Image 1 (tube, rainbow, N blue to C red):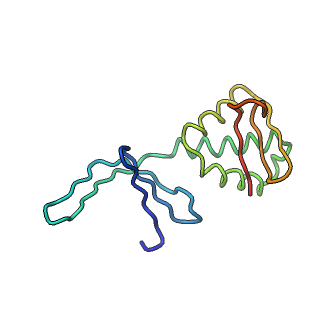
Image 2: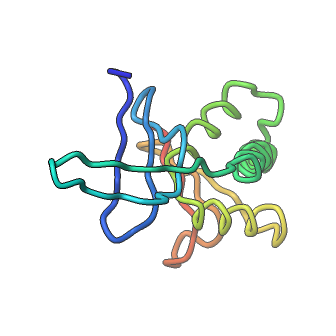
Length: 131
């Protein structure tokens, strides 16, 4: 497990596991975190079911590519999906709702390739940076 990184957040009951390219690969609920008298720390974690979130990320990547007129581009869809791995659940849910339910506009911006969901002038717009 030398190439894996666990991150345990204080005051929160979650643990994140990163393997490849610093992406979050797995998430766990922190069941207990105890310290024995001899200094041994015991952490019990339960894996979170991320299948629904992964499905939404795939749908979002496909919908964004389609909105940009690139639905046939497997490369763009995979780049989008890869970029979405760095976003939190709440952000994915909001972007998913805007693109797939509300059918808000999806645009691009030059420079560091940027995809804007909704009105780019507003604070609540979704932004995906592809580097």
